[in-house]
Length: 378
Image (cartoon, rainbow, N blue to C red; front, side):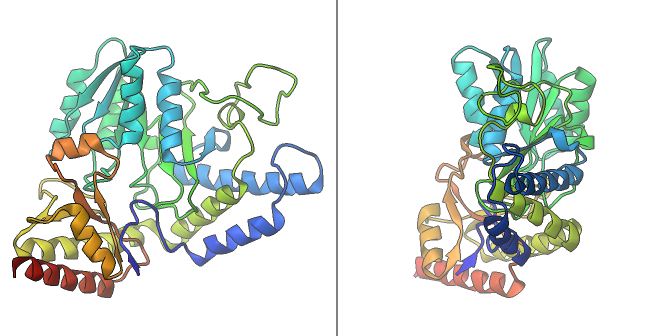
């Protein structure tokens, strides 16, 4: 079995992450922030260490670094929290459903007004499409840093500067870039949401919301925080305000270990390796004929390649590939807006390598795609 579905979640995990999970189960069985005994204190220290690691990685303060269940949860917290008093929201035409669904839900209930900025291959045109939509009541712009369908990189630094100069909150979805690109709040991002289980190599059920503290985020979940327990009002201080309930200690510890792995291995090294595999694949597929590769020479891409084999549905292609042990995702990738923008009515097959994939594996994959095409044509 060869996993090329790392845009969904990276697998395998680094040995250090697997060890961190085992150590957490063995040693960190207390409830962080909810007790003064040794077990609780030891667990609290492990959680805070992971928080410090994540904060330093993104150029944030530890108290502004929030552990979440996943990137979707973080984006919902950010969007609903920042837009709780209404106003105008702008999202991009390449968004994942974790942005578009909460945005559309708020608009449908008439709590906000919503605009969608078209994304182009040229960065200048994309920035201008956002600029044209800004109004006096615009409160936030939300956009993915890279499409989860094609990997196309958006001009996030320029969008961040646009937000700063307009006094607008910039909420960024870093699910497909964090751990591969050196993303920092200093890039102009006010609130960064990301997955812990993808490019950061933590286990599933982990995510992060990292804020610079400029824009208040009203909690969408309230409850026990281990602080101010006699008050019936949710604490306002971070991270407690946004971390109700028992935290995922094991997940947070593995996320810290995953970030340390990425830092020690080197993001540039990871990105160069994964991009090399994607460039090779894209070139081979384009030269086959009868295969559509969703890349444009005018755009920049994170290490993802989406493609379709002519006269074969994306689901059928992925199923045939799975029979040979290749794990790829087909369909719409939870990104209705992106596929509407691309015009891919039947979705695509998505190839997404990790640092652990090899050139030999990709060559084997290319060879089978050629066989699959020949069988289709015979």
